[in-house]
Image 1 (tube, rainbow, N blue to C red):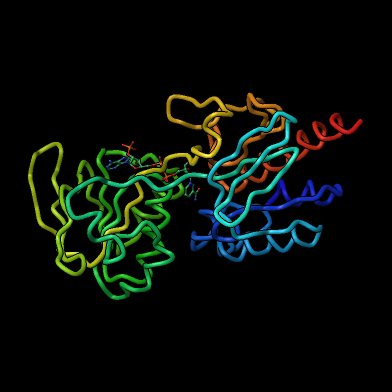
Image 2 (image 1 turned 45 degrees about the vertical axis):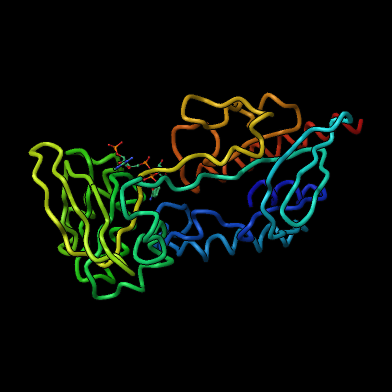
Length: 293
Ligand code: NAP
């Protein structure tokens, strides 16, 4: 949204392609407490809608379309193939983010949408007053555990190590929350249920002790994988699959920039995505100016 805002404001013809109409993971986050300018926090969908409005205000067009493949023609023009249409562009800023990883345990695939979820904001309200599990030890797991604790009767937070990966603020908030029960050094071995989630098998990796926990839902937050397939032939990636960029967000293909969670970086947050977007927009504009002069 920032890249669209900047480039559209400079007068370029800008189209944003996104299967959900934009907003990404931030639009499925309940509250964002660390975006400057909102000292009381702001709801993720509200922040992203404001950003979309801002980009539209300057003339960006936002289309619901899923990009499948981006190729470069002999004339150094990008052909962007979506599900609905194919688009041509002289520069592309690729901000496709990441997809949640799965636990890959028995029962998970079968019970997706029946209690297994990757989005607490979307599905949490369905389990109001019930006991739910959250798996993971990063900021996503700890943020969403706090959101769920406002709805559920109890949240069991299961993490495979004895220390969290999440930042200290989120660690303090979950430890101080009386509705969140921590199960450290523990993993989920199986998710049980016929038509919906009924229980999980939790194993302590230190003691080997195995317990069945009755829960109505399992929210999986065990990291994510970058969505790089459409540009796989045009970029270099690191060992974890993230796009390698220069400080100006350029990739190895002239005219193609990457911004946000999809690229190799040390901090994946809305604030840093916004910075990436502005930097990529500036570099793309410089590239476009060179092309036309
Ligand atoms: P993450 O930081 O990669 O954390 C993933 C967590 O899942 C880790 O604790 C990891 O355990 C665990 N895990 C991975 N594979 C697992 C498996 N197979 N079974 C059980 N546990 C497994 O991912 P994230 O929490 O989605 O965060 C992604 C990025 O977004 C981070 O940079 C994060 O700071 C940022 N973010 C920030 C906020 C915020 O500031 N409020 C909110 C959400 C996300 P190990 O720790 O043992 O590796």
